[in-house]
Every structure is written in structure tokens, then in C-alpha cells.
Image (tube, rainbow over all chains, first blue to last red; front, side, top):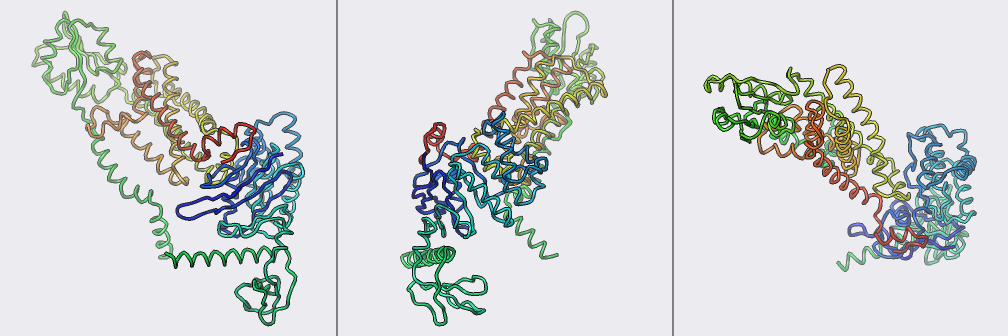
Length: 284
Length: 356
């Protein structure tokens, strides 16, 4: 089976790079999670993969349109059509008909729990149900590459879990899945994680590789105020990251987990960006 | 309140198209429609036929008669054909006895002007012509307006409603999905147009039926050429709606632009003001508006029973407009739907992976 994805892709908008040499593998039977903050370039990655944007440089490997399923960051469905009519439209678009379509639609309606709502208008569904319907529409034709742009943003925890069940089931059936998200805990489920920071790859690899690559040391501190520039809140405590290994006074050493590794990598990416920005300003 | 005023001004400042419309549009409308809004006909295309054609043409002293054809060899039937084909509004048939003046009753203002001018000319020429008003002998306004209004209603349906189609997809985010689905640009546009085409066609039938039943407007010609002209006209108006939709970012912009296309058709197509009475500086606008040609076709077929052979010009021009407008719409829409290069598209049709 073919592997899809982006290889060293750069996308330029105006004078700025929306993506700079980013690689996002999307292998069959695997889930790749592109994680990052707002404006990191996650949606751009998926849009390039979907063929909605042309890269300035780099290679894009994707199947023909007939084998791509895509859910944009917006609702991704027709609010004035019922659940069933939305599925019917997607089926027509991908030339699905007859018993195959009926069986597939029925299975997806059961998996998503949308069966009882099949006659409700898309616009009358809850946010979570809308996202599940959009994913079901994208899965209807059993795509080789499934692209989901922040499918779980603004969705309640139960619906998030159901959405991830759908995503995992698609991967188990051989589909290559690329998902963007801002939730670090979702990235931990992936076969491959690509962490983006300001359009650049801050870290990439399996969750275990990213965790193993945690640079420096991690500490834990209590207190109301921020104890150090490279620190972040976690529950009632502060996590303090010391890239050089020297924790500030009062910090207790701690064992980093995947979420710490991702946050530290993002902070490292921010620092690197600030350094190169200062360098450019000085050279300019 | 000032917070709202300030916010509104800031938003307005960033919506340059609206600002341009608010400032430039009134000036343009005033100038264009000021020159177009003219009921006074100063030039009436006139043909003079028959053995005494040369003398009769010389006797038409009033400058309102713009004699375009003097043909001593032609007869009464030729004169009637000239009026039917829109080549003349007044035809004077000379021969033995009093001359016969044929007037095109579909041109209300021209006929009224011609009758006044004839009343002045006849005594000085020493003859009392017979006058026959063709196609609309009672000079009924509704007979003239209904065929045109049918077109105007189709412009509203076609352009205004369709203009929201693509914008709605863009705003709801489904345009991105359409772009990823295995559709071609023309398929999406055709899919958007066909439902409105069917609804508008039903509307047209209803409007014509009401015009015939309630206003007693005749339908003297063949349905076939009328249907052909209406179909082409609908394609142009629907294409204009789609084109507006592809160049608009939101529904407000789409409505503004569509309105810019609809309003000139109300006033400059010959529906209300005679095209021949418009100043030359704005008359050319009439000739790029599809409603101008549809009115020519619908009045020609419904009132004059004009055959398709005499309507090939407006039908051909509507077909050309349809090709241009729909071509532009597809071109614009393709940029939204298929930003990928041709090479990619070609490769995507195969089962091979696509690399760029």
C-alpha cells in the first residue's frame, strides 16, 4: 500500500512562510496527528495534502480525489439537509449507490449514533453530532487518505471519544488518517505526531520518540505566580523546564510525560523562532 | 451609542466595495439614468416602399422620421416584414390611392410620436394617409410590458437568488469539501444552475399564462423559438448570478453586486424607456444587457409572431453572452475548486499517487 504525506513542504503567503520545510507522513493503517497552537500551520498542512493549496516547494503524495476524505475545520455539512440527505449527497459525489451504499451508510450511522437523528436537519444537530456526521460523510467512500481538520475542537468529551473511535476504526481498516488538533492528549493516540510551531516542525516522531527526546530537565513548583519564563500550569502546580538542566531553586525534579515533552518542544520552537527573528533584524 | 457608531465606521472602512458603492453608485446612477430616462422619441426608423416611395420619403419633413430605407420595388408585405423584424417602426406604403402608414404597436412612445408628426405632415403634403397600427392595435401598455416583465422577473430570480449560491458554500465551509470531492468546476456550476433553471422555467410559464389570462396578452408566435430564447436568457442570468457569487466573499457583497447588474436591466433594457430615445453615451449599455435581447425576442414572438429567422440576431447575441458569462464563471470557480496544477489533475485521474 502507498504512503501519502508531505515531504519538506514550504508554503509561502506574501513574504511569510505558512509552512517551512514541513514533513507529515500519512501511512495506511496509521493515524498521524498534527498538533500545534493557533496559527501553527496545522490547517495549511491538511489543505496542501487535500490539494486545496499548492506548495511553494516540496513534495505532496496523495491518492486521486476519489480516494480522499476531507473534513474542514468548519462544520463540513449542509445545515439545510437532513443527516440522511447529507450522506446521500456524499454518496452521489463519490458515485456510491445501491446495497453497498445502504450498508455502509447504515454502519456509519450506527457507529456515530446518528441513526435516530437521520431525519434531523444538519443545522439542528449539536456540535458533536455535526462533527460526527461530517466524519461519516468523509468515510462513506472508504477513502485511502482521511484528512480531519480539528474534528474535536469544541466537542464534548463523550463525543470526542466517539470521534476517536471512528478515526481508529478507519485506520484499522487500512485508511491513512491525518488529524490536526490543539489537544496534546489526543496526539498521544497517534502512530506519528508532528508538532508545529509557527509553520516549522518543532518535533516529530512516535509519541515515545518525542518523549525520549525531551531535552534538559523538568521540575515541579507550587505558587501563584509564574516561577520562570519556561514554565506552564498543570493542575495546581507549575511545570518548570530547564533546557540546560539547571532547575530554579525550589523546583522538585519530575519525570516528564508526553504532554510535558510536547509543551517543551513547542517552547523550544518558540525560542528558536525568536532567536532567528532577532538575528534577521540585526542582519537587516 | 458612540461605541456602536465608531465600530460601524471601522467595519465600513474595511469593506471597500460597500464604501465604493455608497459613494460612486449614486453618481453613476444619476448620470446614466438621467440620460436614459427619456420618454421623448426624437428618431423613428422609417421605411418607405412602393412606386411613390421617393416622393413620399421627401414629403416626410418632420425630422423625427429617420428614413432608413426607400424601396420603390418593395410592396406592402415587405413593409409589414420590416416592422415584424424590427428593422423599422414606421413603414409608408405608397402606390395607387392614399398611402398606407403602418406603425409598430409594440413601440408605444414611437407610435404616439409618429401619429403626432403625421398629423402635422399630412395636411402640408396634401394627402390623408390611412394608418394601421400592427401587433398592438389598442396600444395596450400591458401587452408591451408583460413580455418584458416576464424577463425582468427571471432576472431577479436568476441573478439575485443564484448569486448567493457559491457564497453560501464558501461561508459554511462546504466549498472546501466540494473542492476535495471528485467534481469538476463545470459540474458544480451546472449542478447549481439546473434547479434554478427549472424553477425559473416554471415561473416563466406561470407569468406568461397570467399575462395571457388576466391581461389578455396574445401569444401569436411559436413556442419553440420562445423557449430557445428564454433558455438562453436564463442561462445568462443564472451565469451572472454564479459569476457574482464567485467574486464575492459574503452574502452582502453578492447582493450588492447582483443589484448592480439587475438595476441597469430595469431601466436600460427598453422595458420602460425606448432604447432609441436614450442618449448615445448610455445606449451602448443596453446592447450588453441580456434583458434587451429577451424583450426583443418575447415581444417579437408573442405580439408579432416573428419567425426564428427574424430573431437570429438577439438569439445569437444571447448565446454569445451565455458562453462568455458561463465561461467566466467556470474560470473563476475553477480557481476555488482546483488550485492544483494541470499536471496534478492529470495524475489524480490515474491510480498513481500524486506528487508535486
